[in-house]
Length: 238
Ligand SMILES: NC(=O)c1ccc[n+]([C@@H]2O[C@H](COP(=O)([O-])OP(=O)(O)OC[C@H]3O[C@@H](n4cnc5c(N)ncnc54)[C@H](OP(=O)(O)O)[C@@H]3O)[C@@H](O)[C@H]2O)c1
Image (tube, rainbow, N blue to C red):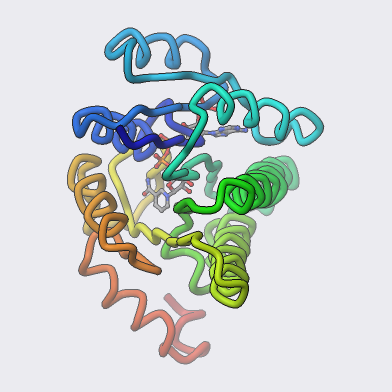
């Protein structure tokens, strides 16, 4: 039986992926801060699910906690890092910026570093990070979020390069969703909002193919391309 860990598996995309993997007979470790949701998810498939209460911003205890879950599972084929914080911040409120930076940069970097080191020790593994289409350009609605997602995407690319150069058997995938219908998706002007089950199906298929980058849904590849080529003087007016 294959084994996976979902960091941030209590709701939304992470929870959907956990449930998909369980359906496909994987053993799954899920983490998150909300204890009651961890209990609820475990109670649906007690033999296949392991849980860990884990706040990724608690940097001092983060490695020790993730290590506990790794030890319970013994070997881990796949880790999907879905944890994230987002908020619209037109007033550039520092409390919001700080929270987003603490989770999406400090917390996530600690998790990526730990997982990559564990996979090196183990000799193989597949690390999947869920960044965002927002990683491509600065977004005036949520400055720290778009900047943090660029950080995640670049970090994942750097880890992929490290793995390749050292001939490690570690795959790294960057998932860039557009909009997915979860509690996080808020604000005006959303379009092409994907249901969670569709996003999950496409992410699972992309992981199986060992893709470097997965756009969710697939047609967001077109938006990604447009965002990359659009001149700043047009982009700034949108
Ligand atoms: N929905 C979209 O439209 C969209 C678009 C692009 C990218 N994304 C990305 O997709 C990922 C999943 O988001 P989602 O849409 O599924 O939203 P969600 O339902 O709000 O899920 C967010 C997950 O992050 C976890 N999390 C938040 N803060 C955490 C912390 N300090 N420590 C550990 N875990 C933490 C939450 O668990 P607890 O609260 O239990 O800790 C939850 O499981 C995020 O990285 C997000 O940026 C989403």
